[in-house]
Length: 480
Image 1 (cartoon, rainbow, N blue to C red):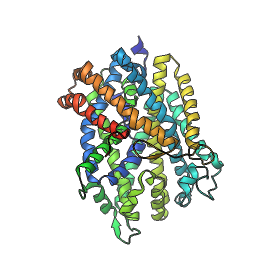
Image 2 (image 1 turned 90 degrees about the horizontal axis):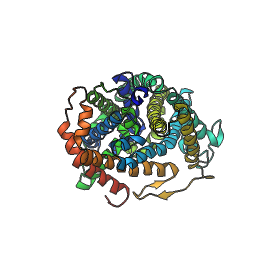
Image 3 (image 1 turned 90 degrees about the vertical axis):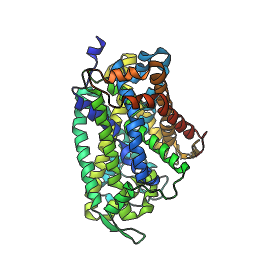
């Protein structure tokens, strides 16, 4: 009776677009390009593609299959598999709970920049100090007006972004997640492809006096830079690519377990997983094609050293440097990033809401409202974490990075808890339940799993070892 009552995606395309929407988020568009630039361009790309087809595939297949097999959300699914491993479900639910508030805060940043460009204020958004002035309410940058809402502006935009997310989740699996994914994802793909093509047509002179084209930037992205390559630097590239896969594929955070639980038993799971892999990887690569050529043309190779601030500090300057068309491109770019952030935030909230529904028998409305209010409250703390007069501080994390509130939450969820969840999943599937348990679920309906042998080796041996290295590096125990 429980299975009949449970919501499900109407068709495979709905599941693929929703899962791809979750996978295609800020990790692809924001994080992927600067990691690629940092780690040798094409070298990072090759390593990422290899890991996506092996390591990423293993985790994605495991989680989606667990969801469909148990017809449960992450909080309760692992207990269904093995009562002694129910703690994994708790951890898998805590991860999105930590991520949601700061993801909503970043979504608010994206919305702010979209509004700035669509209202013709792209030049203002590109000015020095704009970004740090905005997120800090003017306390980190003298003379920043703080916009219409003063020092609370970042909170207002975060609340709007969170409200949009909550409304879609409130509408349910079919009427909300699936329906909006079928609209947002095609629009997102068209925008990504269009901006990527435009980036390749660019020509300009960077501050170093060298005239470059978009094709020159494309070469930086696609051709491996092996200069100064050592065993240590290659290992760093592998670790960066592995960390990126968590962001890109939405694994180890309960999302794919939740979405898998809504997949019908007669659906071709193997084909759907392959399609999710394809869409996610395509957008990640196209994000590099969008961003790296533009940065190389207008700022030179040094422009890629901007790191995480690339999207909010460097890119607006590049859009302004394009002239009048730059405001249009900037508007389209931040619209695309907004859609990507929204589809991912929807999946993060759904992982928590579905867990509340299954564990505590709440209604969807109650679970959505409670979690949204809690996320907003914590999100306010995240926003004030950049306000010098309230919560601003600097701490050094075990991995050596300086951090504020948002960075600490990101570190705990992505660098510590997600590797632990992934390691636990590999041990549970690889050594206790055995890989055939997942293979049988994936092949249900007579469909053949093409990478069966690869899956067995990865889930039992290779993936847990790589994950352990990643965790030790993140904790500062293993120094690179």
